[in-house]
Length: 188
Image (tube, rainbow, N blue to C red; front, top):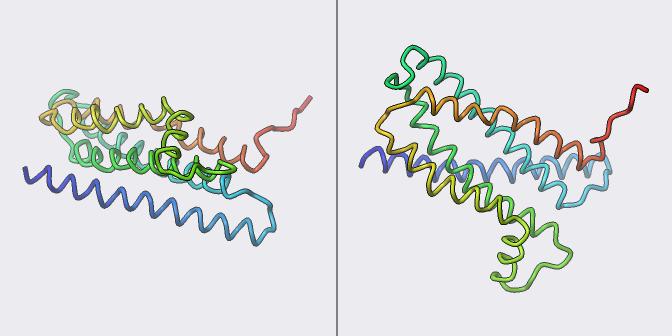
């Protein structure tokens, strides 16, 4: 029970950390674009901030995964590493944060947001159904599986964390797209 309490506190604190990082990067980008006199919408700025935080999470997840894989490679079933169990809480909190951040980005994309909360949430869920469902399944199914696995298979948990390796590159595409730099010159 003590580990569950510590994990829950870690999850809550890191959720606030992810949200703080989102607002901080949004503030920095807004100031930067204003100083450069670029006409970037609030929606695009928030979308880039979400991509920056996602890239940071993907990088941290990949590093944790790599450390766990290297440490547990000698016995893939029984070798244990504290990052395998510890990062579950931080990674899980990221999915909670990301659901909220996607909602905020969605609201910023609307020309006129519905006045009632139910209308705003319904609009968000209609547009991002599968992504929200993915986040809910990760938090409600996968996170408990990783928490209550009795310390078996840390190597495979590390491999799972390494899946995020493509995240920074995917998110760079979002940032480049929002800045109008996605297309490259052909060398024809």
